[in-house]
Length: 298
Image (cartoon, rainbow, N blue to C red):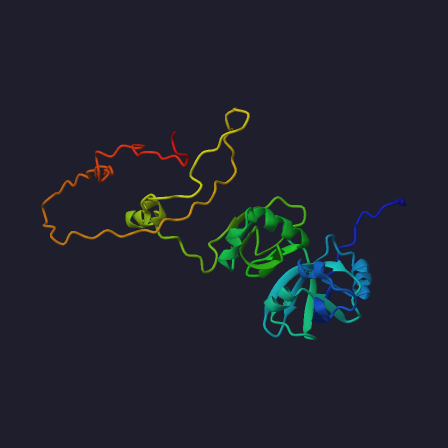
C-alpha cells in the first residue's frame, strides 16, 4: 500500500443556493456606502462566507440572483460579508431590474460564468454623447462590476450625474464575467437621439451676423485717433482689447418708389463744393482808422 501526501481526487465544488431578504444599500447600518451603489456587487452575511468556504466554491465568487415572483434574473459578485444574518444588501439599480421591494425574498445561487469578449451598450439619454471619452468613462465604471447580464439596465456615475446604460448584447453568452478580461465595447444609438438636419444654403446665408452688414459709423467717433510715445519709438501692437466705440445709429434709406423692373440706375455721388465765406465788404482794409492823442500838440 502506498500513501501519497496529496489528494489525487480533488473535491468537486458543491452549489450554494440560499434565499435571503434583500434590502437596498441605503438601509445598510453605518455610514453611507456609495461604493456599493455605483457597482455591481452585493453585501452578504458572515454565515454565507462560512458556508461558501465549506462548499469549496471557485473564485472569484459569482452569483445568480432570481426573483421567483417575477422570474427576473441577473448576476453579480460579492463585495463584503458584513450584513445582518438572513439579509443581503443590493444596489438600487439591481433591485429595480429584479422588480424587488424592501424585504422581499431573493434566491442566491453560486455560478461559474465565461469570460467576456464583447459587449454592446445603449445609453438611455442623448446626454451621454456630451462626454469627451465615453469608452474611458465606461471602462472606469465597470471596474466596480463583476458580471454583465444581457437585458440589465446598469447605472454609472460621472461628474455628479447618473447615466443609465442598457446591456444589449454580451459574448460568448448572455451572462459573462468581466474580471481581468480583454473586452471589446460598442455603443448603440442613444434613446431619443435625433440626427442633426443638414444645413441648406439659405441657413448659411442667414447665419451671417447682421451687425457685419451695417454701414460704417459716420460723423464724429470718439477715441478714433492714434497714440504716440514720448520717447519717439514706435508703438508695439498690443493684443489687448480695443476701446469700445459707440455704435452709430443706423438710418434706413428711402426706397425708390418709381423703380421699374428691368431698369438700372447708376447714381454717382457728387461731393458738394465747399462754400467759402465772403466778407460783406470786399474793399475792407484792416487798421485804416485815425488815431488821437490826449495831449495837445504844440
